[in-house]
Amino acid sequence: MAKRVILAYSGGLDTSVIVRWLVEKGFEVITYTADVGQGEELEEIPEKARSAGAVEAVVEDLREEFARDYCMPTMRALALYEGKYPLSAALSRPLISKKLVHHAHKFKADYVAHGSTGKGNDQVRFELSVWALDPDIEVLAPVREWEFKSREEEIEYARKFNIPVKATKEKPYSIDSNLWGISIECGPLEDPWQEPPEDAFEITTSPREAPDTPQYVEIEFDKGTPVAVNGERFSSIHRLVETLNRLGARHGIGRIDMVENRLVGIKSREIYEAPGATILYEAYRDLLSLTTDRFSFHYFMSHIPHEYAKMVYEGLWFSPLREALDSFNEKLAENATGKVRLRLYKGSVAVVGRESERSLYVEDLATYSPQDSFDHVAGMHFTKVYGLPLRVLGRVRKKFR
Ligand code: ARG
Image 1: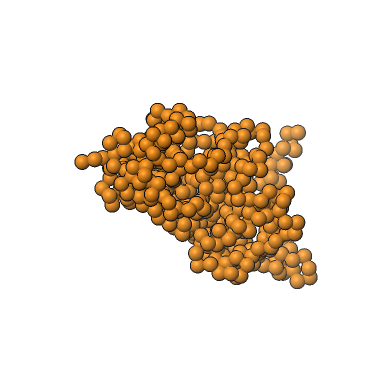
Image 2: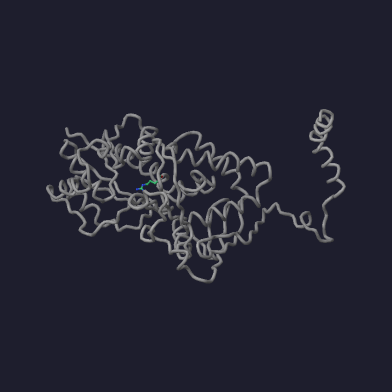
């Protein structure tokens, strides 16, 4: 019986060559392609896969599952890798891995395969996710071990086996795209001093070219989930994110340029475009600060965003720790119902207003007007007691000066 493998298939040159390469190695290949909002037509995928040698090609729309079960928890964690990257590529890997495992079981395959290289993060994410879900499945990564040293050699191989190769001139960039954002690397971006050329960006308008008048957006949240934009209600989260991507992209929002630490030890220069995620993070952070008590909010801010981002980036999605942090974040999200108003303008997004039926902001306590109901005498006593340790220290210091 032939060895059977489920291959994560994008339809690009690498994964098409992988199909044939695996067939030549004696595998029966079933391709798996997910729509995670990468914005590409997937209709031709099955035909492409078959002409490369696959016996079966599965294509699935995962946009809502991706948005609901991966992007939203990450937003609720306000997780940004190294304070900047909203983890778009990193988030799609565990979901795709889960589906690879599902189909491996369904088609009785002992192997799954992916097209990641040996120096990136994605190999780690795929493999750890698969092993966490089924440790008996073997993961193959042909790109790490095959003989091709260049794109030209791959094209030559593809031609030899009549695998259709797109004739269009390729951009010099390596791009990974989904609903939550676009990652762009390689080509001129490999020089970290060089400003990203305009043609590196896929969806955002240059802030320079963006409209000269600001646009206001109102986002409504229900228990930590965005449900409406400018009064229009969405029952589908991925549609709402798409809408924010469009609005944000028009105003040049969500461009990120950074040098980041990869898991394998190297630093790499990456740029990202994540207009929708950028807007949602700003909005959610603000709502959370309005509806969360000080103790919980400070605990959250100092313990969650960085830890959560590291876990997602480092391939630990299917870990009990991630689930436990989700429970914590969901607890805080129970109060995150309300509205945030933001201003989009030439690459910047600013929260300009917020309201919630569960708001902890009490105007009578905050005001400096005659309506003030704060007990100022209590403030005096509080300050005296709170400041006692430093006052005592001050006395001792003075003695020894
Ligand atoms: N550096 C990002 C990450 O590790 C993006 C990698 C995605 N791949 C790409 N071809 N840009 O999550």
